[in-house]
Image 1 (cartoon, rainbow, N blue to C red):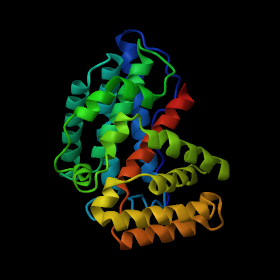
Image 2: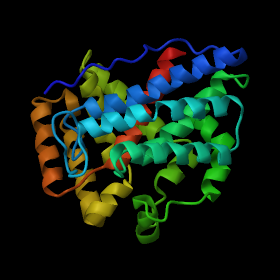
Image 3: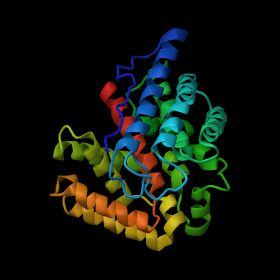
Length: 295
């Protein structure tokens, strides 16, 4: 099945904004890219256990149409977070925007948690991009800005008691999304981005192939709290080992890579495994890549 075209503004240079109109324009462009990243993640197939325009993966409560609606509903909040970053807003203000974004998401999805992790991670990166584009303009990596400006507050902040990340932290001692953000998203910079660019080298002109290479790399390397929630230690180990085997066989550069990836996808679905944290990190990888290309 072919995914619908993504009709969003193409990347433009983010020069430091001057004046209210320029600030709002920069924030809109940042939000455009955040939503585009979520839709590009959704479009890529086959991602093990995850929703796409082809099927619903290991999920019975959501589909591509719901995820697309959810992603588009977040645009004004991503823009608001970018504006807050331009003002060098504290973490408490970013959290309040994030709470309103989550409420809007739950309204359009009928209570289904489609993008809570993305609101947190992509939201922080939007704020960092706003910080970078505003009077604080710098060529410092977005993840470094998050870690330096808000990292300490992120570490000390409250956790969703009902979230999969909180459950994994209590049961398995893993840090989840909060630790990843506080450290400046090392999984994105050290694993996701290099794999995305390697995928482009292996399959030039095939955007989905590059995303799949990054997705498998993240599954192979990240302790995904969604996998731990659904499959425990054994399920998470199976996911990691299977992803590593795919990459060792050449990843998207190997023969019949789509068939092999589809078989792994089917195996994840049979086990009800879904690397939702890696899906969020893939969207963040795509966003940061877009932002770096735009500079």
